[in-house]
Image (cartoon, rainbow, N blue to C red; front, side):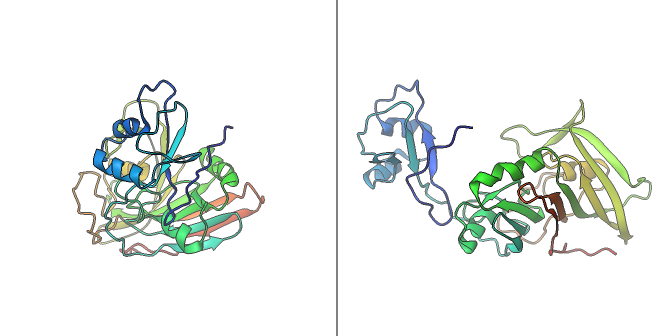
Length: 303
């Protein structure tokens, strides 16, 4: 496996520097010209200011405003951070050793930096709080979903833990609160084909060979609401939310299914009632059996 070129820039506030590789077939006269094309959302005047401040760096140091384009070389830089809405909930640490950190991610907090959420993410908070600059996720949870996320302390071990999830060697249990339907026969196993197109915020179920499977169990019911145990055999995007919606019992607080809602980023009043409650697996490094249970609780209680 080809190793990534090491960054000459240290992390800033728990964030790695961005890296760009200049295309081999590029014909830009200067690094600046390439950056203006490659970063269309950044004002060219801002790129000029960053070049003047030495913020675009190569293997041999900062690029000057007139540095010539060199095909195949790398550029590292720290992006300007967006103004973010603080998420007023803490990330809990359920377990920590020299290899892994198991964290309780709250609702409304992204797992990793992406889009409008950069510093306000579980990864950046934990890197800073635990002084673990190389911490990385073995898998992810959607921003609206709360519960257990497994992080890896050392980069050379990340592949071993990611492979567990890829090969479905991790037992995962979720808890959800949703309406009940007396005519719905439970437990049941839902199988469907789920696709998510790039640039489209929601996923959808389409005809074809199933690629997603979830076992749905009803554990308790009261006043038209149920507490469900969800056991996914696969990990498609929004799988649990789509499967519950397809059964006619959409998870409470879901801003995507069955209707896409436009909620402000500072609206923390209606959390999705979905919790990643249990992770269990045989540790690929130590061989030990592991089982972790979330300490979080859903806002609505059904017993």
